[in-house]
Structures are given as C-alpha cells and as structure tokens.
Length: 512
View 1 (tube, helix red, strand yellow):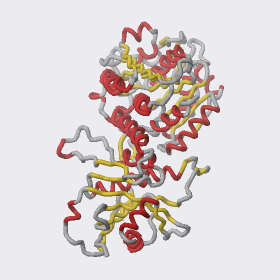
View 2 (cartoon, one colour):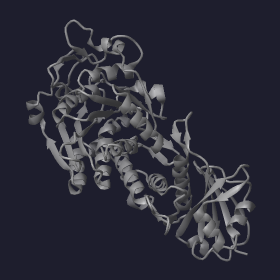
View 3 (cartoon, helix red, strand yellow):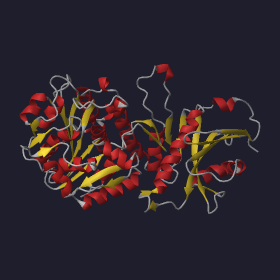
View 4 (cartoon, helix red, strand yellow):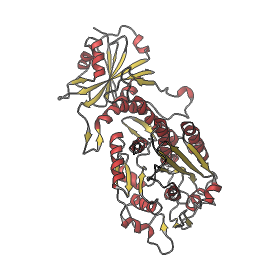
C-alpha cells in the first residue's frame, strides 16, 4: 500500500495536518511537481465520485487514491482541497479538489452557471494549495470544463507584487493542462490573462501609471496583435471640442491623452462595436476633495479603461471575427489653481453645456465627450464602463456590476454573458424621472450632479444618456466590483472585473 500524507485546505486556507502513514523519507517535501484532480459529491454529502481523469489516476494506484479520500474524512466539500503524497511515481503530490454535485448547471435564483463557477474555484484552490507547500510545476485536469479550469488556475495563482523586493516576491507556479485534458484550455488562459492585465494596470500606483504611461503600455501590448492604436494629445482633444474632458484634465500637471484602439477582423460592411473606458489614472476629487481615508484606492479609477484594454487584448488573441473599437479618455483629476471649480460651466463635444456642480463627479464628464466621439464610428452598439459612483458600491457591494441600457436585447446578452463567466450583472432603470434631475435647469443644458437625493448611480447614467450615440447603448458602473476585493479565485487586490464578461459579450457578435 502506498505511503502518504494528506492536507486539507479551503479558501482562505485553513489547514489540518495528520499522518496517514509514515513517509518513506523527506524526499516528498522537496518534490516541485503536483497534479490537481477533481472530485464530485454524490447524493449524500459523504459520497465521493471521481472525474474521468481522477478515475484513470485511481486505476493507476490500484484504488489507493479513493481509499485515501475515504480515509481522510467524509466527502470533499465544494471549493476545498486535500493534498496527498506518494500515491504514484508519476504524480507524487496530488491535490484533490471538491466540485460539488455533478449535475450543477444554471441556477435561476443565483443567475449563474454553477458548474463552471465550481470548476474555477476548485482549480484555483487546488493550485494555491499546492503552491503553498512549494510546488512550482502544476498539472491540472479539465475538471469537466477545461476553459473554466484554465480561468480559475490562471486567476487564482496571480497576485500583484511588482513593487516588492525581488527576493521577497512569491514565484508564480507553472500551471498547465494535464496531458489529454487540454481542449479549451488555451482560450481560458487567454481570457484570464486579460483579466490579470486589467488587475495589474489598476493596481499600479498613479505615479507609475500616468495617462501617458497607460497609453504607451496599451500600444506596446496591442500593436503586435493586429490592433491599430492611436494616442491623441491635448491639441487633438482641443480640436475635437472636448471641453468636458479638458475641464477635468486641466487641474493636473499630467497631460491628457485620448486613446483609440481599432481591431478589424469582421466583415467590411459590419458595424463596429464600440467600448469606452473611463481613464482617470488618479482621482483626488479635484476642488471637491475626497476624504483622505482610502483615497489611495483611486489609483484604480481607470478600471474601466483597464477593462477595455484587456478586452481588446483578449479579442485580438482569440482572433474573434468582429470589428471592435476601444476608446479611453485618460487624465488625472487634481486640485490646483487651474482646476475646474464647482459652479463652472463647460461645453461638451456635441455642443451641450454642463454645469459642474461637483468636481468629484468627473468621470461622467470625460465619458460625455468620448460618447459623442463614438458616434463617428456608426456603432452597432456602444458600451461605456466606469468606476462611476459610490452609490453603486452601496447598492450592490462587490457582487455584481450595475447595468443601464436602452436595449432589452443587449441587456439579455450581457446578462447571459455574466452568468457564464460568473461575473454577474444587474439591471437598473433609465427612467425619464432621472433624466429630469440632470436636465431641468434654467441656465444650462445639463448639470453633472442633478437634483434630488438618492439614486446617484441612476442619475449618473441619465447624465451619460444625454451624450450617448444613436442606437443601442449600455453603461456599466463597476465602482463596487473594482476592488480591492478577494474572491473564490481572486487574491486580494484590484479585480479587473468584469473583463471576462465583456469578452464573452463581444464573442456573441462574432458570427453575425
């Protein structure tokens, strides 16, 4: 009978060690390779059902794997891991991960594909459990869905540590699909790497992520993948009459940049999809200064722009047959003698005048001009994404992205996309009552805060509606999901959400 030891873990990791048999030597502690196998729960919680890959592995151990699972205790809960040593010469360290019931599918109440989400969580927990004990080369079976397993693996082992001393950084393990179980893995890795890109851009401090640096990084990453990148300077922005955008930018010493990314692999006659990301690389609130508590998190106020760049990256890597345009107005919102002041009136690209009642409601100002510019592409639909309102964080917390749209068909598409990716969305109203809050002023066309109390996220969306291009339009408020958060397959930090949902949405238009 094989020698072995087991470790039980969950996320966050709480471990219980116990010896099943004496290890033959300390050699197993020095082994750097490990494998992740999946286990389902049967009708009774204590029942154990192996995935096809786990069954094959169990056969090579003459049933020792299954015996160890039973010996370790009843069942294996979803999202937990147990580690076994010395079960097989080919797989000396094994993480068994709980996938829950085999029949998991779409949960109507939770509005999520539970099976895919269980795979992501299990893959992440298994890889992180192995990494915690020093494993640096990890093979992961498909756990029933190789694409979801790749997403969980790639997202789960990554963390932002660019500014730690080199010798103190954790080395990310090499993770790859188990031989024979790789179909779909590449796509999952691409999409997860895109989200990690958004996480990295968002978590980088603003002195290392100015508008110019952001644009340069986007250009260096996307040009080689068939995306045409144009970076427009302040002079161009002035020529475009983007007075709302310039009013926010003028308070900072950092120069504003308007980033335009064009990817064309659809039909010549196919209208492009246009994505717009809010790119405030640091938001102090301007003259309407924010409280100092947690202001450092405003380095991620360009999370919308980060998601757009990451989506362009994934779409170009996947070579999706679409025409896609990404637009990111980039600047800082800072207080200075040149900064826009509460009560000032500015003019947007479409000629509408805006009274700036609060300079901390700046995201909607820069998006207004970008939305106007999007109309020049005659888009099939326009989507803007922004860390726009604290009200959205209060409404939904970190569970879902708030959605406002004039198209029920587009809502159904993004709702389905969120259910598949596990990064859910929830629809809010775009009623005329909210529009009146921002437009019913005698001296100007629009006010950037509006009248009335409550409903701040709805009022902000109504403001953007005044500048949206004709046709289908959708606004995503990601203030609640940007982070710093921790999840079943994300370590604490800025999240890069909902990059995978955007990619899934774009992919739905690939063959139309």
